Image: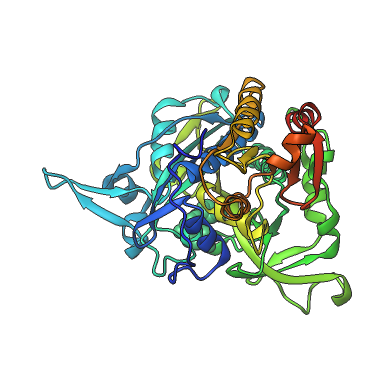
Length: 438
Ligand code: ATP
Ligand code: MG
């Protein structure tokens, strides 16, 4: 993509409404535009990141055996009356009436809808287990939408729902999702720590929130220092095998949110305990028959009787992750994208748009990178070098390739790594190899 053609509405000044760095940088880097409180349009650069985050989430859900579907954003109120949540949900739910005065709502989550689908289609224990997920926009009329996409009113969520015959099966489903979540966040270069979370009035052991440590997190969290050195992707996972050892390994290390942390009972000595702020990027929950029992989602078992399905739900804040990624990856000059989610891998800068030799060299590199399938944003504009460097640093592409008259004479160009800041003069061929290979 040539920057001269790209829709990248950058802001020079820090927007006054943005209190945290990810919100500021997303607005300044032209990734999003607010349309009303907590509701955003995603512009080309932001959408590329959102799509990459979504794709990693999808791949890891698929790998764990979950199957993708797509449920609507608009739901009928009746479904929520069946579970009893229509009245309980309160003002966070956006309620709508259609032209026939039928009560509808913009879905804040999909337990009722998926339970109804499964109730109508799965009749026998032989059809279990199943795990179905979708990646769909949700609406919650949050009291205080803030921090940009981190606490929006309309936001993109991946939500999966598991259906099992019994509690042991439900635990197996839960374990798969826990492993899938650990892998998902690790692939984005994030350390997300599963923390015992409050299961609320339903009780039970099985609920974990995945928290990323960041100063701007909304919750206070506590964890064993050992978490900071854990490498999840080093482990080979076979989803058909028993994942209980993984579950034990990952939950044996202490980690808890504020609501669950009791200093008197904490097994980790103060010197080994990290106290920090956390951003919740995912939440997994086993809730047994909370929805299946009232909604009549049952299967027949071998002896002919019927039992309600054991269920769990598993959410990831896909759009929140884009903000969380920036909170975890930035410096004074701007964003520093991890390679796995970067909107483009390379920013190619021609420092002299008026110099025919530089243009020819940069155009040739652009063609070669594209031929190699490398996502590249080519700054071919007639702007000062300072402005070009500032733009590239702000939008945070992992690699910068800088073509200028100095290197031109020597037949070299400069390669800069955005994260380390390391710069190297290399012959064009070597520079390309460096970047294309990683
Ligand atoms: P929170 O405590 O942050 O309000 P929640 O417990 O309401 O989250 P869930 O219902 O478990 O969230 O939703 C699953 C995931 O969706 C959360 O872990 C979070 O990453 C994301 N999420 C929830 N609310 C929002 C929001 N208002 N804006 C963006 N992402 C959100
Ligand atoms: Mg909430």
